[in-house]
Image (tube, rainbow, N blue to C red; front, side, top):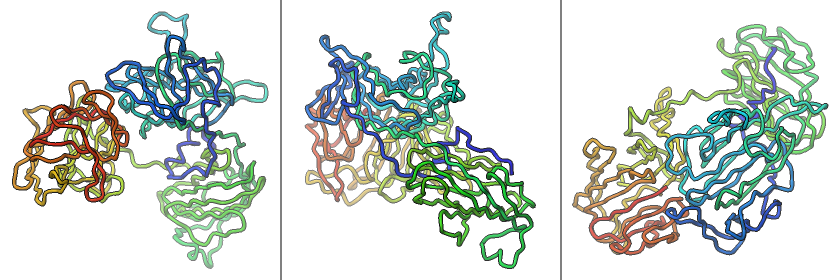
Length: 595
């Protein structure tokens, strides 16, 4: 069973692909006191916001919890650098850029993830928001100085003045005892606003503007502050410093045949048995179908709670650690959380290759104190892979009806999703006349809908914003909902991207027209025939006026833009137990959502 072991690109991927979770880790939380280099532009405040029409400006309010960089003539912007140095880390933070502003986050002070107002871009470059910035060589000709940068897979940036989330799994460069580099640094994954935009990217050296001209084993977190107004909050780092665990002193026993339970082994005689120094040295299986029992010692450097995940591709598995024994096997994989001692810990594994097409070996991974998800053994099939995704081509299918799952609500069965050339997309619930979701980026993942038998569900691929639970949004002056609602369908308007949804509301025909703004900043909505009263535009209990006719709805990360002089100020109200932002209506309502 000579199998692949400890493949670096799997150390983070296994956690996602097998569905495992990292064992509990204690993050290092960084406030302004954790950094040095502040020349006066950085301060800790309680709140920041922006007018999306005013370039390079953030407003702030007193308090704590937010690191705000607000450069001024007497306080020029400067980079801040963490006092502590790090190697392998998971980094999580939230950031806000002013309109047109620019910043960056440097892992180890050397490898930059770009922070930029890339709000309406439909193409991506290494210098766009979330990109891994280019390396640089001034000796090369113009146009060729920048090289080896990585553009994000798609633009999932939010509007300036809105909090965005960045999550990074980073593996530092490795060096031998003599200091010679043996392995390049690597971004195992980068997620922006909940969307994976990079996976398993090798960086061959520091990016432009790095603190050091060479790779290092450890370095500080550096935040760029000399390019404009920007703010950060909830900066957390999980360092991974533990030595990789090992498995040794292996004994094994193989039984020929197809086994679906341990009871099936009763009275059976093994066809092969022996010992090996490691799992990789166990001989290949003796037949197309068999079950093998393993006993071994798992050695960890530090005592603590660990999580082990075992999966046999196409087969069944059992796992026990310590003094426990395996009583049953499962076809869905096994996950065990266990307190381990430093040093050797007994471990038992059962791998049942019960089908002819099952492959040799199994996937075994571990995470724990100071240790990110690490592959101890990878089967001949490689790490477990989900079905290849089925993506909807927005140019070929810009409108798709499907089921949709939204948080804390039943599955919706009559949802219309609409794409645009601006990569501004939305979903509409036909059963209630509700605009339920908007997102920027790629259109839809239809894998759940079309793979195998399918369940009818499609999933937005971009940075998703849920606007609230489905409900008839037009209500009377007393906020009572009409008793009658009946959908009348939808159509594309004049062959354009503009959609018109129609329904009967209290006996009157309502037209609900939604179109993507030419600027690509969001959508415009015109609802006519709804009567006088109020109309809910999004869920939430708060809003903030940032300029005339523009309100920030912080709970949904959208801007509400409308003619308040004609309609009046928004109000908050709870209807049927659901809080929302409502606008007064006069038989119709017109507003924009910017996101």
